Length: 220
Image (spheres, one colour):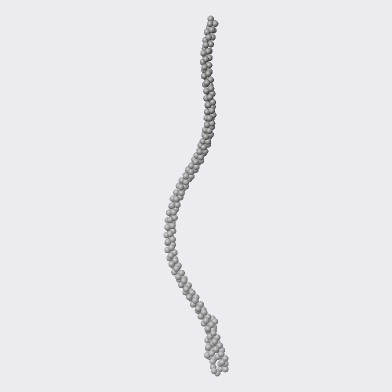
């Protein structure tokens, strides 16, 4: 608006100048000076408007260049998006195939796991059996230890008894020796008693015979 107003003033001044310039006019010098001042002002206004429009043009050109660059970038992004979309479909198919393979692998693993769980159960049962057998073995070992202790105790008792029997055997031997000595004494005495008994037996017979004989005579 500023440049348009200044341009209109320049045109009006030009029309006035062409209509009133005359060598016979008393105010010719004054009008000329005013006209020159107006022309100078118009020139300055025109230069100002030119510079302003040039600055605006430069800004617009930069904006246009940036817009074109943005359009190019957007076009690249659009192409990249289309390419990525195609790749997404391709990748989705690949992922679907991968999911299928993973499902198959999971099924195999689950089958193996079920088989191994069964084996674990069997192993646990076998382990429980082994543990029970081990406990039984331990009980047997404890019982054997007790038997060994008892045997050792009995051995000690037997050793004590053997020692006692040895002492008893010594005592018996001593007593036997004493008894043998007593026997020898009594055997020696028996011989004496046998001689005396034989002797006295004969005497008793003789005495009895003599007595009977005289008694019979006495009774007659």
